[in-house]
Length: 424
Ligand code: AMP
Ligand code: MG
Image (cartoon, rainbow, N blue to C red; front, side, top):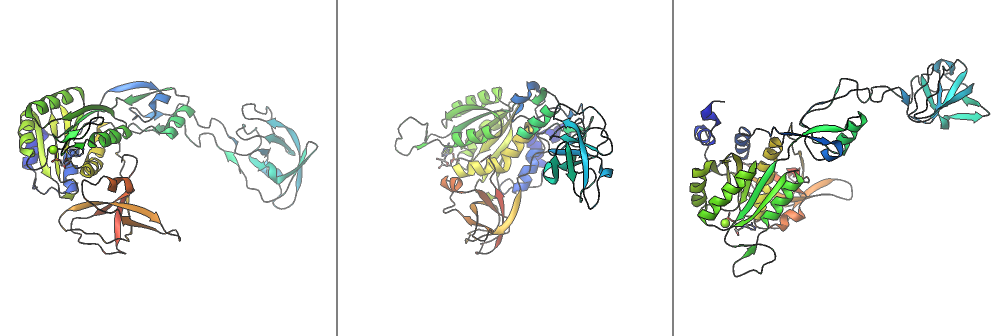
């Protein structure tokens, strides 16, 4: 990238799009060009690695499992001793326990009692489940119908020595933590948590604990944003409510950018308020203001201020969540080192509701996916779709994504849905 391409404002001028009608996909692509993951690495105990992003490839130092072992409680036998149909009787030469191997060779005509996880003794190549034998007096009688190598777990069948067990950029969930433990590795390198500072703007906002005056509302965005950031594994810095006052806002932007990798605000980017914030942010950094061709969530600002990434989200509570989900989530995951950034899957189902939709923008209506008595899935819309109706989000379990050119939808039409994962 050249210096001029590196500049958000320069890039926004050079790009062939209309900031008053920015397509969702274009905005995503634009933002992605400016995201460089955090590089700071911390060594942590694997338990503390839960929910963090791996900063190194984990290469297996051993075979997992380290030896051929039994998948069942039963008898380790030589397959050649068995009959395809018909019974054979073998002598039990000893027992192999998990952790206490049978030391010896299984001779023809003999077998070894073996427990799940025990090393398969030399000479044996097949495990017969204990339910499939008649055992009496140090002898077992085994019928036909067995396969060579059955019920064996091979050394290295999970992981082989030198194999990359987990790639850098992987989110460490309980399964990954367990896998690392299975290699005998107790400490791992993870990326530093992304620090995200956020505040709400608006003279009408009141924090919880104070009574509401005329025309005032409680600040809910800070709580949803706090929740969404926490679920993404970010370190959150809640900076409270900032009044619509240029001096206070400027100070808040500086304070936030100084202590965080990313600054998120809600409110103050809609028409009327935008000019004032625009002027402020233009002085402080490089920010582009878009009217995204989407509903809800039209106004969105993105850029850098004092070295931090900045997302200026709209004020309406549903718009905050939709823009966070559709733009901020991916950006934060990329910045946090996730590679690849997991895609939120979409799929199609019939819609049972009538949907009002004007062509010209992408809509993210809130839907409820459910199964009928016959097990077939369909989606219905939650009631009112206003961008201030947060209960549409609490009722919903998915977005119904209606593409730009789509008009009204009649019941029975197949629509695209995106399940709201835990970020919401
Ligand atoms: P704005 O983008 O600042 O013009 O705000 C748009 C709408 O969202 C207005 O109705 C605001 O009162 C409302 N709003 C803004 N910020 C918040 C907030 N933090 N919590 C709840 N509602 C908000
Ligand atoms: Mg406002």
